[in-house]
Image 1: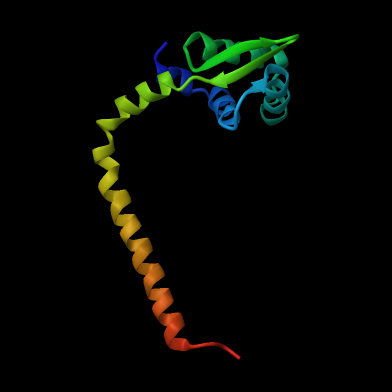
Image 2: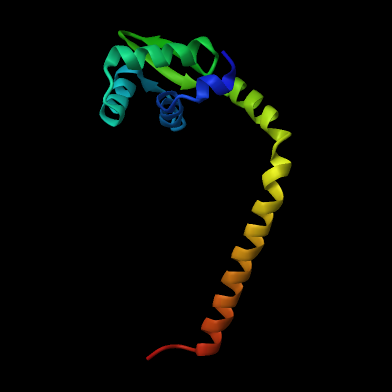
Length: 118
């Protein structure tokens, strides 16, 4: 399975998002995902297994708990693959950043010219 196939599933993407804050137990993840997506604990476990088997997460035992954490290696591979495509959106993002800065500057000038309000 290609990394983008793994990331193509919204449940697996959400699991990774939850892990960006650090290690979490399988139980915590199953509870959160169950609430958000309405799926069972075994279904969440299957998604965690896919993430683990494809290198997106690591798991360690802590007594009876299994603690999951992100392994960034496959994410770096996705980032490398996407680098060829950045040329399509980078100039537009730079232009947007320029327009946002211009708008902020114009608001500051306008505010300074208007002076304090009573």
